[in-house]
Amino acid sequence: MSARLELPASRPRLGPPLRRTVTAALGAVLALALLAPLHDAPETPAASTPVDLAAAEPPNPVTPGSFRGYGFDQCLTPTQAKMDAWLQHSPFLAVGVYISGNSRFCRHQPNLTSAWVRTQLAKGWRILPITLGPQSTCVGRFPRYGANIDPTISNNSANRWSAARGQGRLEASRAVAAAQALGISPGSTIWYDLEGWSNYRHATCRESALHFLTAWTNRIRRLNYVSGVYSSAGSGIKILDDARATRRSDVVLPDQIWIARWDGKASTSTSYIREDGWRPGNRMKQYRGGHNETWGGVTINIDSNYLDLGAPRAAAETHCGSATIVDPARYRAIRKRTTTYRPHPASVKALQCLLREKGVYPGRITGNYNRRTRAAVQAWQKRVGHRVSTTWTFRNWMTLLSAGPRPVLKIGSTGPDVRRVQRTIHATMPRLAVQRDGIFDADTAADVAAYRREIGMGAAGIVNTATWRRLQAGTR
Image 1 (cartoon, rainbow, N blue to C red):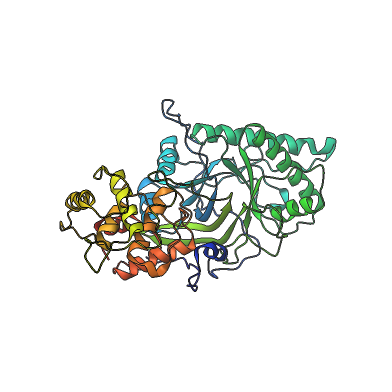
Image 2 (cartoon, rainbow, N blue to C red):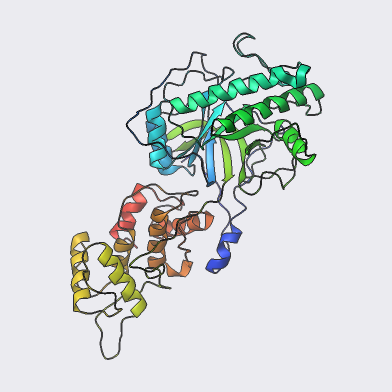
């Protein structure tokens, strides 16, 4: 890999109630810029290609939904092969794509189809649909193709900036139509890209932009989507935050903001705006501008982003009628009882429950390592190709705890698959005090990196297909 993303430095291990509180600071110093336009590389302008929805398929999940992790955006939607390589090897799990707007550089998006969208969402990606339509006259480089193709935001203040508001409504309607054609479900966030300009105090540009964005937000909400606005920390986001702080009644604020501030800090803070706005969980930040990164042998020119949207959580689990039975303090090796050794009941109960769920143990959950339990142990060992014995080893634990599908997991992932990884690493490396909560955050990434380093895979904090193979083989 020719590019790498710095995770937080290692911390002293805290108890489970405290570890989640230490994950807020992420990233490393990368670049510095005052104004940060959303990056899009030159592309020959062409009309967007309409796509059809697969009507028989169920609706896609809302995107990005609740997500706390890393994302990238680029001008041209990547091919499936590039997306697959980056899913397996990069730290990113969110991707920004230009779905509409006549002012885009990449108006022709040959890879962006409803099938592409459905495939990425099914693989775990979070999609950030972006529209780049009318821009402020203060930006200076628009219209890009001519006033009849991509007009700028009207500066006519008549009738409470009705012309600008009309443009905002129209652009929102077009963006929703494009999103629906791609299968992007209601409830998803659609982002308006308002490029930055140098003087946020310019009254005409400020007011026309605010009224345009107010109409955008109203229409996006009315059409059952979530309103997001991308802009420079020093211009578009600044004027929105000032309107919020002064409680302007004539301005409707977007639901979420995407701050462009190329300070190299993977967070959602910037000195340009106040800390209390759009918190908790309604900010993301583009912290590094256009640059090449290579993951899995594939190079893409991207902007880097950190997202803190919603409140990531994993649903509670129950196993064999209990919320805790498969999560003992430690997963211990188990063997037949002797005069000097007695199997630990909590570990035996966890084992019996998990073997029952896999269909090899038909008995009751007793905590006794009895003949029926030992027979189930041997049946499982035979199933996974391990040495058949009445002794249950840490390698056996790993195969049982990790058994199941192999989705790629990284910072931002949540759910039962994350718990499988957390339990498995806790079984083989109990010194890490892994928190088994189903949330893949910086702590879990550090735990995964420690495991991978231990077995000679390299210290990436990603559970890709190769990592799953090692976990499910019981490699330690």
